[in-house]
Length: 115
Image 1 (cartoon, rainbow, N blue to C red):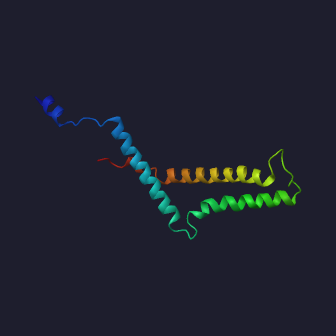
Image 2: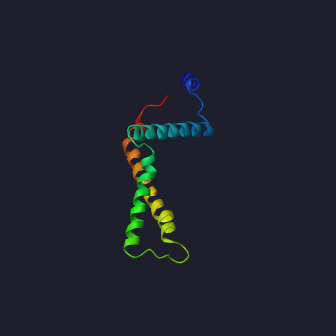
Image 3: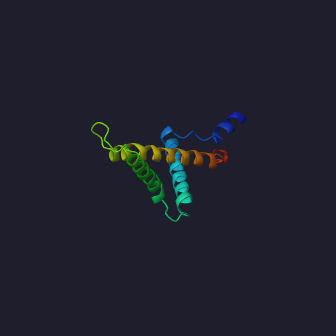
């Protein structure tokens, strides 16, 4: 008798699709929360994410040009190489460091009770 009462009170487990939908909504909410907390208080906002690597790339380009390394490498010019290579490395670095910071700052969230 006690087993029947317990069996009737248990709810069926959600499907995999429903679980993935919930997880997707949580991740999107965290991304929005992180973007708002990161960029809403800065004067330049999201521009700085693109502007910082661009400024650093231009600085490297100027230093390479002043050092006499302004010649092209094969068929690729110095400016094209700096923009397509160095700026992407800087953006990747910024994204990785921001992601690690977000994970570290939000590590307590999975410990919250569900439901």
